[in-house]
Length: 251
Image (cartoon, rainbow, N blue to C red; front, side):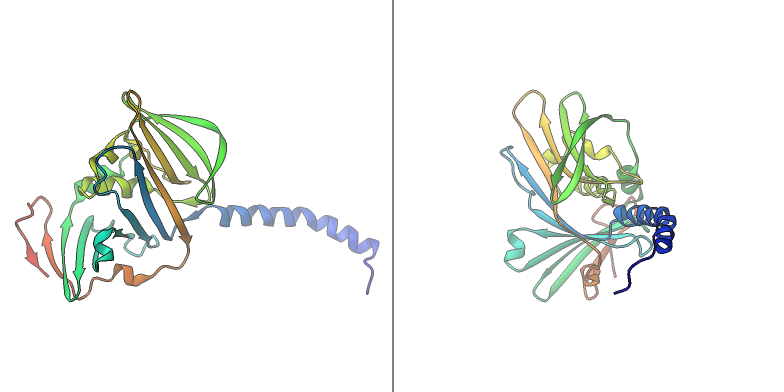
């Protein structure tokens, strides 16, 4: 085996700063990725009303591919063979809810520019950074406290991914697909534009012992199944912007 000479050692010392810079840039490139992949959104609460608190399975497409997001409801109806999905398209500001039962495939597409704008706009909020870090769903997270007159929300954010989960949450509320208790606290009016991804929120009533928890888990970055977005073969009714749900045309 050849033993390194003194000259070789000196060459390595000259290159060492370059290795350091390459390592730094690799951390910047791979440590903060715009999220493309899948995750599950789960809920817990001590409120008596627990309707519409089933697990929601999300698939997030890459930006530029219609910026699509699709959610599948993982509830008792799914276990009985009923598949329910909601597709959000940020390009044409529409959301489409589809349902499949055996050979019956139907859905409704609603165009809602105002709803999208409201769901993505930043609002003035009262927040405070909390020192320390915690591991949530396998990710290192920092903590914020968001408060208003009646509620306080503990919000855990990872810097490993970049994704504004608040816009999805607020869209779901606007669509009437979530339990009204999940509106409390309004932490979802805080939008992460460039860095970070909200992983967990616990919202508590300041006066009485009531709370709910939203947490993302089963987070998988990378390749997605494009069949999750496939609605070919569905009979879709279209509701134009500003029309009520009785005015439809069929695709």
